[in-house]
Length: 70
Image 1 (tube, rainbow, N blue to C red):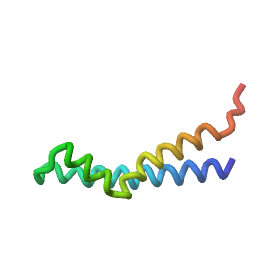
Image 2: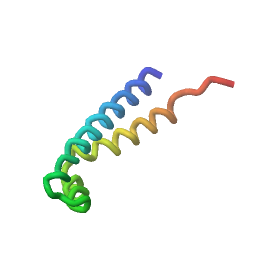
Image 3: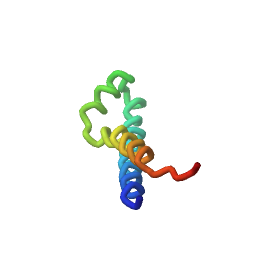
Image 4: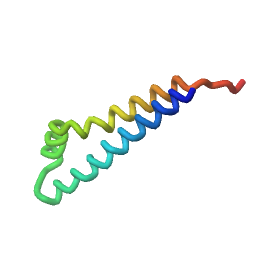
């Protein structure tokens, strides 16, 4: 059970790190980038992949967590 909680916290950290990066790169929009340019740019940045990876790891941890309520 402790491993599942640790896995959830790792996923949470990845999601926060990737989400903050995505929000930080939104500052490119006022600089003249279009939404298409923004999405093409974040596809090339490896740190932006931490957000979906973290969400997937958190979902896996939630499904692995034992549910003892009956």
